[in-house]
Amino acid sequence: MDLIFAEATSPGRGGVSVIRLSGDNARAAAEKLTGPLTRPRYAELRDIRDDDEILDHALVLWFEEGNSFTGEEVVELHLHGAPVIVKRISRVLLEMGLRWAEAGEFTKRAFLNNRMDLAEVEGLGDLLEAETEVQRQLAARVASGELSKKTEAWRGSLIRAGALVEASVDFADEEVPEHVPLEVYEILSQLKDDLDSEINGFSATERLRKGLEVAVIGPPNAGKSSLINRIARRDIALVSDIEGTTRDIIEVRLDLYGLAVTILDTAGLRESVDEIEKMGVGLAKERAMAADLRLHLSENGDIVSDLWKNGDISVRTKSDLGGSITGDVAVSSSTGDGIDALLLRLYDKLSLMIVGARTISHERQLVALVDASACLSDIEGLPPELLAESIRAAATSLDRLLGRIGAEEYLGVIFSSFCIGK
Ligand code: GDP
Image 1 (cartoon, protein in one colour):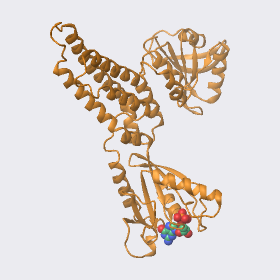
Image 2 (image 1 turned 90 degrees about the vertical axis):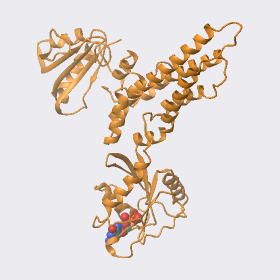
Image 3 (image 1 turned 60 degrees about the vertical axis):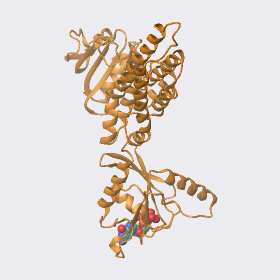
Image 4 (image 1 turned 30 degrees about the horizontal axis):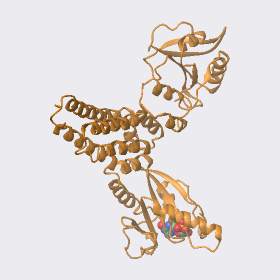
């Protein structure tokens, strides 16, 4: 593969900036700047030179082909973390004929060189995007091959069942009708159960990965923006006495005890005669209804809302002003009273929504598993040839899950979400 390079660390000043080179003769190219590199996977301290000029003094790491992240020859220059150094060295590398890597190109090469499968690539992408501990844990499991190992085990079952079916065909007496050993059905039924429980856990796992959405709704001046500000502990939403100041939905990302949660401020949700505003209100209502949960705010705790859904939480606001205790929780955004209780209650409810979470969290993975599972439906009584065909089709779907086949259509989408240098 042609020789690519990119800054592997995020641009800007820092302790170190790493430039990574990958491709044929990466070592020879780097040696023009560093002088001879002797031992692979050992850090060597070198002057980085452009002819006679010293550009930096840096640690250099070299990885052999077949034993690197991309599977190709790789060199890493661990430079001092100054953008001017990176800029100058990049210029020299470009002059030498190297090419800037595209977003995610290193990972793409790792995939194409079978260093990672597509599920691991998706896990790695999720890991880079993760904002909370729970998201990190899920992504780390997938990135380190948990889904791949599960899939290999499922594939193993299919191979075993397939071999038993083939054998029953091969040894069948011409006179005796071919029959499929009972064990085949046992293996396949167990496998289908496993696949189905992954499939059933998808929506919980996806929620976990993407984060859960909570809409804050209530009449104008109920205290929605104030509550969101209080929760976010920063001034993200507008707080004002004037009705309808916050017209569009404002989103606040929260790390709720490890869960990723997006709070939607629907302060602009009020009946209006203005046509454009009406459309905005309609959209805001749709968003609020689609959210995983709604906090219904009111000053007296009475909820009169057509947006109420089972499982929502009613919140009485401005508890510092006194009044009776109604609603599920009473809060004061002025004093902070009740905010922790509200967040705990919210956490408890949201946690219930991710109880069934398993491993798959991407639509692409779901489609492959649903296909595989469908191949194993209604197989009872199929003639051996057709059963063998179903087993092969299920295996193909699992290959698709790992990106062994049919990956091309997804590569562009997946890698474009990676940053340059990854
Ligand atoms: P929204 O229209 O629902 O977003 O309501 P706002 O958050 O803009 O609040 C409306 C008014 O109520 C503002 O004057 C806030 O200062 C006031 N307010 C909000 N929360 C509290 C609270 O907990 N205690 C008191 N005393 N006033 C509050």
